[in-house]
Image (tube, rainbow, N blue to C red; front, side):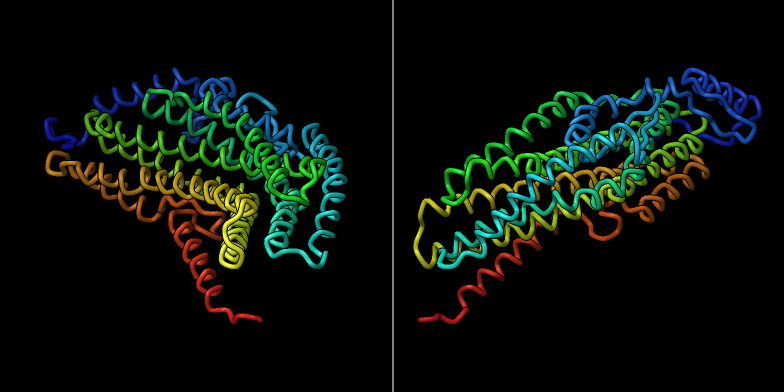
Length: 418
């Protein structure tokens, strides 16, 4: 695509053109309900923040679900503002529901631990016991992994609110996430249905899984599924915004002052990149725990299943381990794949749009802005990471596959005991 190829070369604006451009920008600010203060900064109106906060309206169902489950007790304290307080109504409710669940989960944890310590069981039964003992651990880590980052989560939500208003201010179009609201509601329901279905399947496949034990796992598996849904919604939303921003670059290049408009688009891109980093920082504890649990559970299930098949042949009992491994790999695949596509839309695909600009058809200031835009992309790589601890991309899947393969090789090379 040849941006600027059919448009005239734009030179430096004369005073009259600058006045017209300033009036247009002031009108756009006025239409958005913004005023310019003495320092030249725009103060957003809470009413307008609420009006243009399509992301909040789209993901409200997940926010409410996390509040009901006591996972992330952030709340909407005002129009266009999300907050977290240690003694708010939502947080006190989270304390109460967590305490009630902890009493029951502790009882089941003790029961499952006794099963692990029993002697004379088959190897696959030990594997089952270890896996379902480890799945209970995230419940006890919830206050550390989630609540301690509550302020960062609220900051991330507020960044989204301000970004959407700024996007309208710069481009003149509001962000609308088509179909994401329906997807968000559907994922909320599916998260619970899937968690219950998996545990009922394990009840029929495991001889030592009692029905009343399964009730301790429903909310934990629903939380894991909801976190995967939250990741999918956020990555999809960022990817769509990045795609729309790239497609609108020609509007900036065809304006009366393309250099200034490109600078505004660059600010939007940098803000979107910062939101990616803030998302990983805000949920680093939860997704860090999430990835570790999924990786360990998959490896243990894979090893246990392989060992039983090689030692005793294929049987119906191994179906439960297959189900667990497939479930965990599906969650990991969704997270890694969505992160990959989002990074691609914000990085390589966006860079390709800029590189396709015909620099010979624009003035020197515009060429400089294009180079600065490319530099900003290079210096702020749009990667999904967990507060700089780990990058989330497709390499995570391949590394897990390599590790599972090495464990399989280790099984074949172990000495046989007569």
